[in-house]
Image (tube, rainbow, N blue to C red; front, side):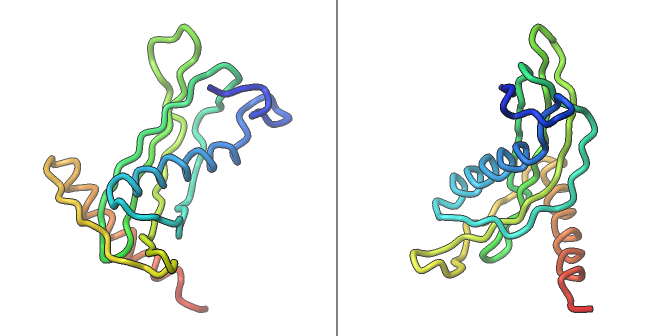
Length: 141
């Protein structure tokens, strides 16, 4: 639940809090899947579509879209639910990349995912396209 200390000077949820909650939810998703310690490597672009106010419940949904060797992409969607409302509002979504680490903080192979539904298969394929784009952006100018 969004509390008054989570608000910015405009009276809406400070985006930094949402980033922290993204990271925590996705780190837990990576940890549950892999059974390993996982570190955040990349936050993709984020656009906020709806403001969130004090007293609203934040709903964070995350899923692993694809695992490569030692890293994975996790998709995350955020919704807000006002007190007494029946329908949640879409707030934002993005993708995070995590790497699995051993006890020496070195990358270690992660258990694969096997998409089953059409939606999972689409997410799986699209994750590879996003990964290639990330690698292109990392190249020195």
